[in-house]
Length: 210
Image: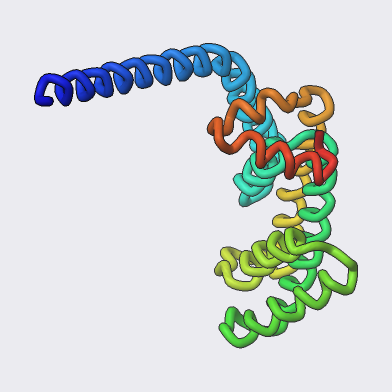
């Protein structure tokens, strides 16, 4: 009985070793196959973000970093998805910047005023039939215009315009790259773990991105 138990235990150990070896081989093959798409994805993202930052600096915008941040949010998507995200971000930023400039020109960065402004922004986004992403982007623009201390002689409307211009540059650059350098679905799927692929692909099909 003792010899039999040892044999079963050794057999189980050998099966475990073989299973780990097979998993390691599959992982190595996956990394080797995915290496090139991941490299292209990284290069594409880095070039797009850098181009957006350079364009914003050419226009001498004071907070030029908002342009590459916007590009990074949008450029990860396909062209169809990028158009949808870009439109929502454009609408939300415009509403947030205008509302922020209007409120900041009459009130200071008061918590109650900010709370009421965020509430009103949600109503405005609903009025123009925008989705929740537009509300989020608009809230960011509103918070920056209303809460960030103004330096020098810049007025609230100038800060609102700069914020809108920076985001617009990021959107335009992201759309240009989505058009001239589209990212295929295999590249995006390679960025996922094996157990995430099927569920994410199903969601992309529901949204019409694939």
